[in-house]
Length: 211
Image 1 (cartoon, helix red, strand yellow):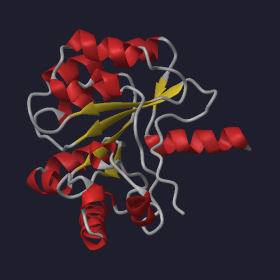
Image 2 (image 1 turned 45 degrees about the vertical axis):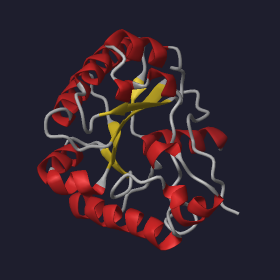
Image 3 (image 1 turned 120 degrees about the horizontal axis):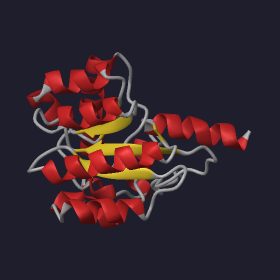
């Protein structure tokens, strides 16, 4: 039976965390995010929605060219446990193909919309596609609700430790609060000696720690 738990953090000793961004690409906010990351020499994982990639292909391409990772976040952002298996496969396959067109390779990581999964969904996402399901430790930051920069920063800061996966949103709506929170957190964490890495790099570090 496929494991249907999401991975929120990884057991590593290195001072490294993964910033992740959902629901893009967004031609206004995504470039602001990777400019912040460039300033601190950080990398991130962008979990993209297929329909948004089709709307903003140049932004998706720019994310890849900046050296960031693109993960699968489905084609239309549905609640996967509610879908028949064939529709679930289609949601993954369409976006996988779009990502491969941009990067030249299949994506390695996946985040279920709403972090909602099940044994049946995992049998497809992990069993058939080989994706680990990626969650996050800072759900309480709720940046998608636009709760204020200070709230996003504080609730994220509380959860930072080596191996943390941090969730933010660059797609849809007004993401200016998220951008400012990420600017503050990226500067703070790098000043404290943390590296900002992709989820795949965190997975590699965790495997190395077990050897």
